[in-house]
Image (tube, rainbow, N blue to C red; front, top):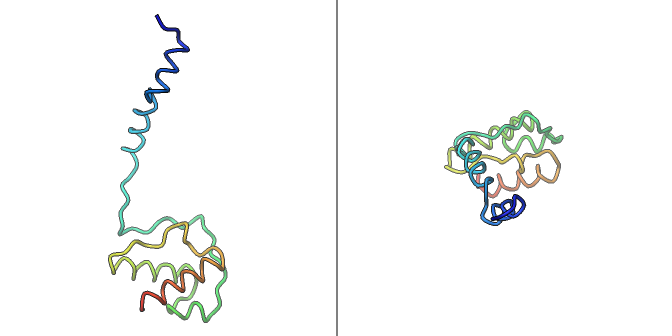
Length: 104
């Protein structure tokens, strides 16, 4: 006969209760759709110069991201991720370089 503590250790070794809960959470998670853009509403864009915005003919950084996402999706590529959103100068410059490399 095993004690409660030993049973808990056995479940921890086998995966126990957490495997079912993890699978259930994953099944409720919406599938990623490459044609939709991520939610950037909580991210504050960095400041950009007029020359930087002129590269895409944008009026703001948010407009620049929207135009770039539209072009990426049209090419069958994924939109800009939240992690690559230009909320710092460094990320903005990386994004502009990516645009220049794409040949647009």
